[in-house]
Length: 354
Image 1: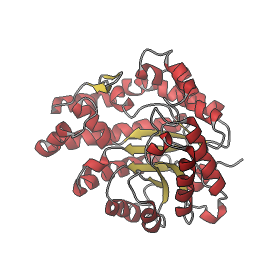
Image 2: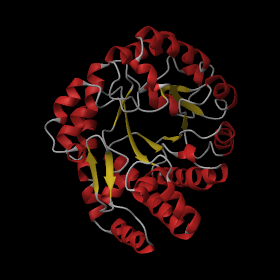
Image 3: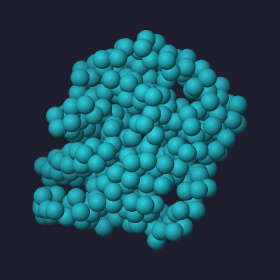
């Protein structure tokens, strides 16, 4: 059987040649599944779990086994694997989330550069690469395997704040007060992302996605400089090494005119634009879809609501995007309280209404 998602991302294949919309779900491998929670109990903490190839490969495959309609597996890892590989402290505390050592000075950034050039960078990611190889050996041939990384801006916020943030004041403080150091940090993360994604591809993933989860907190000019430019650098450099590997970008929360600018001006540099849940679907279909394949963007909050509502809203979404290339997904990742029957309703609706 053919890989529906890969065919959809192939710019040489017309929409009319595709019989259905591919579908996968951000964070489809994770806390809402009882089989995940069973494996989670076997690891000391989240990073221990994510670095354990045996457990992480099983988690990656769990949703594929449960939901036959899924067209892709998504690597079970975390966007903070890059600071971890750069030898920064990364731990996950229950009820708090990720806690990182903070980057404050140019000396800290110089240390990151040295760590990036050392063998230790890939050594610390060996568990992730092992997961990819194991999954690739077991994944059904009609399924696509997706790898990913966090975008430099989003990863930088965690490294500068030391944890998640509501106002990103420390990250923005460096951006405004010490732009040369800030840009040096962003460029270091660009290089790290290229190395990481390239190795993921060499290990066996077939598509890569770059998540800029916090792009929406930036001004227009900042979005262009610190979200779009770094992501496009990563995409172009990865594709220079691996020209047949599609790249998906998610600049979550940016305004419509910026999405249109990205889709119109830079569509040759990447293959698919993922939309956050706040982007109006009809506007996106009318203004973006003629330029680039779209992915998204059902509100993840629906996954804790009535399953009939999930089915109906998904059917409406599929109808809106029916005239262009489209990958059905959510606007961001599923939450831990997601109902399994709602995931099934979402998948059923995509396949029955495509």
